[in-house]
Length: 268
Ligand SMILES: [Fe+2]
Ligand SMILES: [Fe+2]
Image (cartoon, rainbow, N blue to C red):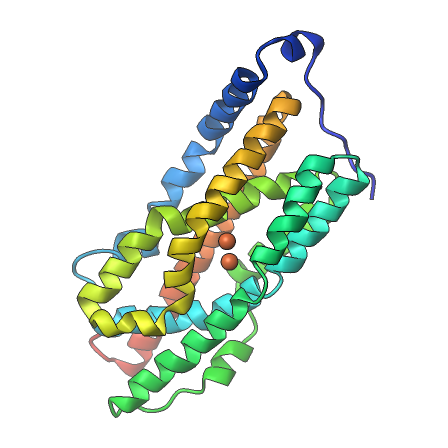
C-alpha cells in the first residue's frame, strides 16, 4: 500500500507563528467535525438511554448489550493504535508515530473490563431471580453490521494511504467518554442505584482515564496540524466516520434491547 505523506506547511505558513498555525488548523478541524458530533447527540443512546424516563430494565439490558458486543470492538484497539503508529514512523512522521505507539500501551486489556462487566451484569440479574443469560454466549456473538463497520473503518484507515488519520479517530472516540461519561454514570446511579458502578468498570474507568487521553490526543492533533496544516479535512473525515460508526453501534445495542422486549412482550 502506498502511503501519502501529508502536505507540510508552506513557506508562508511556516513563517507564521507555529502555535497560531496549529490552533487555526485545529479550529478548522473542529468546524468540519461539528456535524458528526451533533449527529451523535441524536442517537438512541443520547436521546433514550440518557433520558429521564428510561426504565431500569431497558437500561440494564442496554448495559449488557454494550458490554458484551463492545468486546470485539475494544480488543483490537491496542493493536490498531500500535500499527498506525508504526505506519507513521515508516513514513518519517516520528512525533505522531512515537505518540501513537506510546498511547497504544494505555489501551491494553480494556476489553477485559467489558468481559468482566458482562459477567457481573448477567449475574446481577440472576441474583434477582431472573433467568441466567450466558455471558460467554453473549460475548461470542458475531458482531452486528455497525460493530463490523467500526472495525473495518479502523483497518481501512491504518492500511490505507493516510494512517496518520488514526489520531482523529482516537480523539473523537475517546472524547465521547469525556462528553457523555459523567451523565451516563449519573443516569445509571439514579436509575439502577449506586451499587451499579461496581458492574460498570469499563464506563467508570473510561470516564476518568479518557480525560487524560483526550488531552493527549488533542495535543498530538494540534502538533500534527501545526506541521501539516492543510490536512484538517482528511482528519475530520476520519473522525466523523468513526463517530458515525460508534453512533450506529450504540443504536444497534438499543435495537437489540427493543427486539428483546418485543419478543418477550415484556413491558420494559
Ligand atoms: Fe480504553
Ligand atoms: Fe483511552
